[in-house]
Image (cartoon, rainbow, N blue to C red; front, side, top):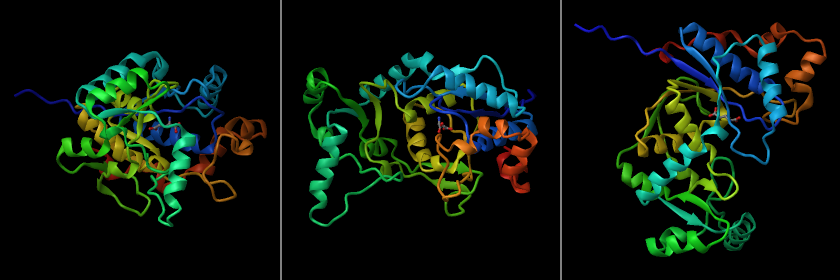
Length: 308
Ligand code: GLU
């Protein structure tokens, strides 16, 4: 009888080089690295540099410097999203052929004005989990021919997924396996609801692929079995599961870890200078201090349900 080799777990830390790493990134990188080590898995680093206006090579160099200083080792060569734009474009084409995306032409300012006008009635406009208003445009209702015409002549536009149509096409409820605690302490099988995001953008004229589209393609192509990332991306998993199902991509296990909060109780941002890894290093801290600052004993333990 053939012996089935157990799948080797693959983890990835996927920073965007649009600033210096802070303690929140360090937690993510360390948890990924340590879970991979404990499970005999691989640890990858992926540079998510789709947004060319904000990403810079000096930030990418600094990421490697900070990760090395933290004592983490990853596989080479690393994957850089800007090297694979053709793959994301091909996936978008597939979704176009399925009739699940449409060109949208409203600018941010127009969206804001339309939402404000609608809210004059006193009814709040629906918002996504990050607090942005759902797209109010109606281009999805145009005929295929009118959409093609709009995409050819509409000037700057974004391609958005028609989320209701996409969910209907999938036809069955979507779930994901979560091994970290969700915002309200859920665990195990989580029901995904991609409609909470409205018709998210999958590509823009100034950014050829969105985070959502490129992340699911890369996770699949790199054979990522465990997506370990901060809880701020918990709800994004709903849209990722939808795209995975539409594009026939495998489903990883998800583990959303807690966020490191600043003294103001808010999530750290890249401008939180004193929680930056480089600033902590310059202030005389050692990598072991960073681990001690970040890891409570439960976090360095591998959840039993992460093994499969
Ligand atoms: N690139 C994303 C970030 O820097 C992380 C993406 C992910 O882990 O799925 O926030």
